[in-house]
Length: 291
Image (cartoon, rainbow, N blue to C red; front, top):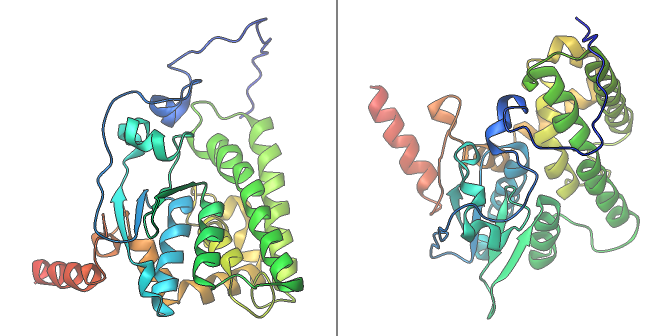
């Protein structure tokens, strides 16, 4: 149903804390920490502070893919950041990511710790550090980086645009939903047309472009996001679904999806990861409890 209430913006905007829908409690118009709390530090070269959202899953998949390729130096500690409880506004987290968004990463593998924020920057940093999943030169490298940045620029229309107004906003606004649904379907068509002629986003080689795009658009293609599969007619994007299925079967992708995931089926959760054996030990523990 359309919202027919006319709205005239005031001369000066003021913050209404109650206006914001499902995530009103964590949205605010200022930056900086709200409380003092240091971040934990484990024993591995990389310290990841995150949550199992699409942006967080990108980075855990990347780490798991690197480990699967034999890069033992990519071992990492994954610490759960509960954004609904405001963990991202702690002084320690803001020091790593001044934007107070997950994920945040500290590279402690060298003589001086390096902070990296923004998931795309993390993928590039890790790919270049280990010489994997990012072509070194030429057309393939350009294609990979182009699709990586396509995802970074496009996903806000999917999540903050369509997802918010379709699933989370306190009022259903026809204009907003129609506007962002049109854009999301355009994006899905961009991917579907491209994947009709390419096995992966950059051609025949699996890269960080696939790792970046899959958590967002793969979930949409399978109707897992926002309860909008029928609304968006996602089954029509055959090539996108083929690609989504293929990547979803990768063992490293399956492991990466589990890390820092406090929701869904308990068998799919690994709230924090601090050792490669965590997967085996937690799986055994879950099996024992179910017997």
